[in-house]
Image 1 (tube, helix red, strand yellow):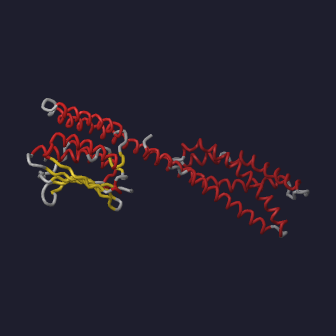
Image 2 (tube, rainbow, N blue to C red; image 1 turned 60 degrees about the vertical axis):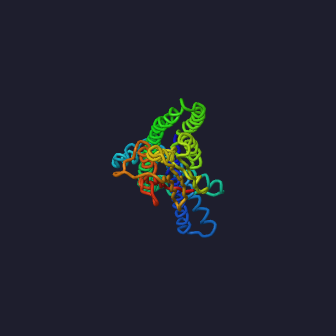
Image 3 (cartoon, rainbow, N blue to C red; image 1 turned 135 degrees about the vertical axis):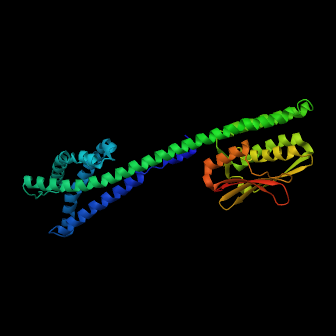
Length: 362
């Protein structure tokens, strides 16, 4: 599973909701015990002990019964979008659960009082069963209302997380496809460079092929990841620049101006190569006089700015991105939306500068 999908999959609403429900349930029974202590005619430890025996037995059995009911109600989640059907199915369990709850509570109280060496004072069994059944039914109705809200929230959140997971998988697939589309385009241009030297300078062509093989091997491995660190991207860019500088010799020089703090920032794989390739294709190849290129990377607050500047290009109007820049634009949109940008603009002092800005947390 891609990293984005894994990150989404780890986010589950069940755990915090479970803790919230457990805390509310414990608080409810603490209030019930406190009320029983206040209502008991005797004070002190006697009132506390009897309140704990009375309400503690109810709390223990109610927790076990309602946990079983919660699990059984999972089969009814398919009816959450039809509340009447859901409540009808859940409330049908009231009588069976009451027949389990009331005898267990009464038997537990008898056992606790017997263990304490005293008898459990109670009304006639018919009155006890009637009162406890009514009491259970009231609390059960309240529990069903809370349960419906909790289950509806869980169902909605799971559906939202599933939609996000599917979107993340689709985005990862799109990014991988776009990255792989770039490789044939890059390979075509690099092989043209080698073919132009293969007859006139075989040794030099052989050197370029060796560097190209190393570059393609690294690019193939890294293309399995839509993003990687700027430091890794610069290694690929340096290999590409060496190949192109071998071809053009004294007609081109490249200056590198990179913030060390920016090297850890994540960038799209093969994102700088089309920027440099654009300069070689539209400037260096089109003129005989020397061309100076400057590759810059700046770490700004929350942003990363990448640029390649040539001193001899002219910006055509209207500005149209070719294959490499167009591919990079689509990858930036898929990764960051409007938070990233790619632009071509005239440079101060002449030439053209192509700039990429994208979010960076490094």
